Amino acid sequence: MPELPEVEVVRRGLERWVTGRAIGAVTVLHPRSVRRHVPGPEDFAGRLAGRLVTGTHRRGKYLWLTLDSGDALLAHLGMSGQLLVQPPAQAAERHLRVRLPLRAAGAKPAPAAAPAERPAAAPADAVELRFVDQRTFGHLLVDTLVPDDAGRGLPSLIRHIARDPLDPAFDDEAFAAALRRRRTGVKRALLDQSLISGVGNIYADEALWRARLHWTQPTETLDRERVAAVLAAAREVMRAALAEGGTSFDSLYVNVNGESGYFARGLRAYGRRDEPCERCGTPIRREVFMNRSSFSCPTCQPTPDGARF
DNA sequence: CCTCAAACCTGGAAGC
DNA sequence: TGCTTCCAGGTTTGAG
Image (cartoon, rainbow, N blue to C red):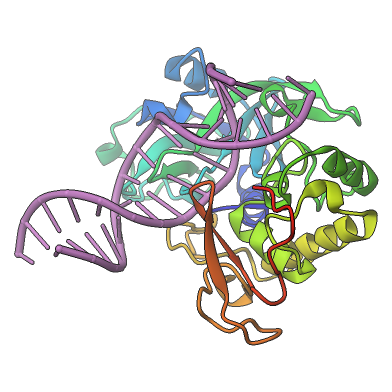
């Protein structure tokens, strides 16, 4: 389940393969993967054909490629999405949803040919960007760019997505103030992408374990220092995941080169039910919230008075 | 505006 | 072995 560090690893992996290349004839194999591109799959492919990729960007868990048309190819990996760069002749993956052929700028478009007729020795500069997604919670779409609060281009569909904690322009004070205005539990707030983006179930639990807060801690009780501690913890665990080259556990999640990331050994709370807390030895508990698991230490993270869900 | 929960998916694991 | 149920969960949508 890609969260911010995993998506950033994908972005970095894509950068050298896609920037400066031209997109060829896009094939949408599963319409659900472009369901948020309202004009439909044909329009999606039409807006990409012949366009040059000018850069790679990310906010929270959203990733986008800027195009020379002024638009952007926006991607969200959902729970099981992967963006792979493969040789064009590589066999199709089991859950391949969209094919985006890429060629070096200036190279002639490949002649239209059935896959079986492709030359065995494809030009070295021809690659294929592939969107593979088992559970189809992820999606791709072409969107227009609008200026963000710093005047930079942001896909219009994600205007409501807050900056993420690794963004230098993230405003800690504004976040603390917004949290205190909320009347909810701290974990629900951490998962609210309009307050802070990039934090999912795993990194929320990890940040709360490090900050010694239970997930039901009411947001209005969090003073500036507590919020600073939560943010510092989230940044620490995300940077550690990033430093390990990405990621986590789920074999579904694969980085741009098709290698499974592995950050599971750095997790102190998530997925460790009944295992001893690394600070105090108390067995980690698992509680269900919003139909998903929350892992915490009963001693370091006691359930607060006035718990909010 | 805020809060909250349902719905959207698939396949591996666990239970029977 | 084979069937059923549970579980993973980010985001949008709409009700209250």
